[in-house]
Length: 214
Image (cartoon, rainbow, N blue to C red; front, side, top):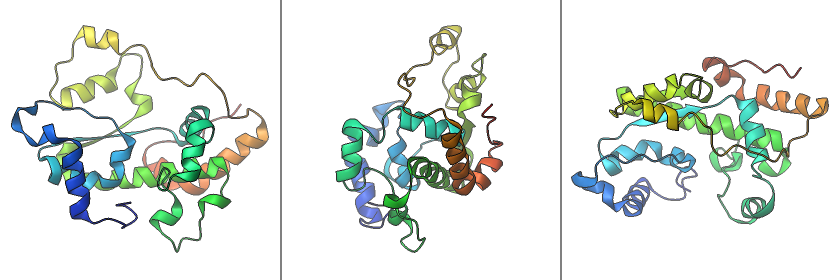
């Protein structure tokens, strides 16, 4: 709602403070939160909580689209919430009503590819707000065989990097087990068209190219 200019900056900042009251006090210590929902108000987090750091984690848009659909973003309870609860999904008409894009006319690949670009655009803007307190890292680099990305993040936020931490982060969690995305060539072509249309410029800046579908 804030990104859609339905609520004010002041209201959004107060809402953030209300949601995390312990962070307003110096004794709170280190608080780490991973949430995609913070992207829409990312520039207000410093005003709400003071000395913060932002880690912008991005992922190849093709695997991002597949992952979101495989995790059931358009099915079951998530599908019902997305259909009936306003602002459950960020949509083109929320950001720019004059763009001509409408969520209801887009296929699944287009919706998530558009979402990838919109969210990363918001997080890219945080670099200007936070300067040296902003770090962007690629998901693919985060989980390499030596955990170099995780080590970089750990040291960047001031946490000691230990062999025990390296061992505990060696096993991936939250992997999608159900494959809802089709494997046929037609869907792969549809996915690549959506990625080119909505993500092309930004993914190139991040060092990504279209995946070989084999």
